Length: 321
Image (cartoon, rainbow, N blue to C red; front, side, top):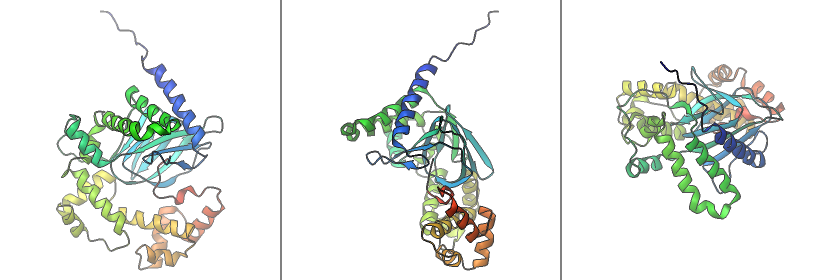
């Protein structure tokens, strides 16, 4: 019986070329350690870092993250996602995470892209683009990694190259972004995104609840009322919220409160008690205990340490790198 000899990937060479092109655009446009969002393409973000990082608290928005150099670890609850140049990270809900850049140096910086996803565009593509409907509802995390394909990487290359042709962006960029979304919807992880665009799906309902939590995190949380608001029973709501986000609604609210309090103390120089009351805590001592568990130090000691750092990245809340 003849044995098949492993053949080289025919796309490997052109994918490496595409990564070099995208990497050069990021090097030119993204300052070291800072997120760059081109004004002409607000859904796109670029990040460059010449050094590995410690753990950074942040919220991954619905979208796709693509690394063209380096690697990263993302913690979602007890789950760990490791991804590098051969992977994409797909997020279908706003998810609080702890992220860490693993590989970066001045000679070989960490370089990445993020493209935000519009749930309304997903719904339109599912109708217009003959995209398969989502599978029967399943309780899966709203974050996953998938393999980078040549069509997807090629589309990202064309999108970033448009930054050097600004007059073409209004006409061409929406078409390329639509192509990227289509490639994701029909990929091995596309079912998560198709759930986003399906009104009545678990992901869509939990997404509505998360939007409410983000807008009202300082208010007392009544789980039964929020569950009713998104048309779920309390037990079903609890189950699917934890399945998708790796935390309970109360834990999600606490995460939002503590990170907003951290931002207020760092950026607006509020004292701990004032920040605690601002985000909904009634007891400063409870706030201090929960803050210490979340960030590893009492509020003012943590803030003093952040102020000594050149880049106070861990205090950023709504960021993707």
